Image (cartoon, rainbow, N blue to C red; front, top):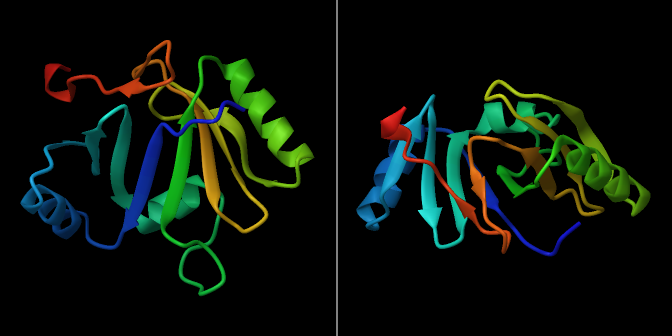
Length: 144
């Protein structure tokens, strides 16, 4: 697994409130399918419903012990790389919480937790540009 971060997803209980908060800070976001994306340098901050993010990560929401409302993500270059990273995470002592699967956006993704329970999503998303240096560039969602 490369030492880099592509996205930080924040699970929110009120998407409109969260979007308004970040916009009040001067951030410019793009809302697509009940998700808000903010380009943040070479990475992306995502706002998404807390329950949806927990379910997508293969975790339960609503308990003090379970999902903390944040998921780290790394975009990779192929479906095979998703499988390889999940395999290596499990071998290193992590727990695969969401086996790799086809996604609603035409990609392929799975998730694991590290030994402290932090969620990582590993995703191949053909709609996002993954640059040679590993930085992520969002598409212009208004053009689609």
